Amino acid sequence: MVDPKLMTEPVKPPYAHTDNMFALFAAEAWDHLWPWSHHGFKRRRAVLAAEFSLAIAVSIAWILAAIGDLQAGAIIGWWFGWSVFEVIIRMGSKPYVKQGPWWGRVYRRATLMDMVCYVGFKNLLIGATLFLALKWAGLIYV
Image (cartoon, rainbow, N blue to C red; front, side, top):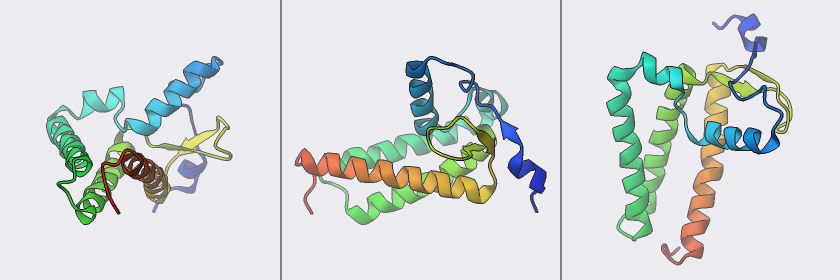
């Protein structure tokens, strides 16, 4: 069981102190798209090769989907697998979520369910955007 104090413990990401809105937006975008942190690289060098190989496999799946050589079920499976993998990585390297509105700067330590919900919803939005972009470009047909 998670200590209730940990669930409300404030956390400050490295970029949370900046007042430059462009830098804050760029850092937020990077934080959402890149699940690894700098200290995560230092602590887990042994697992790094497996992490990057999975990231490459997911990227290849999207390329195959874009050229029409991969079925939708396989893409969904890859995306789900990536989401599970990302939850594990984020809990080790970026274990925080926002508390309150999306435009706020209040962060707290994430529980496992917080991270599952965050990653699931974020990847659902990214996957839908990629799907619509590929469909708009005429690279996939539904």
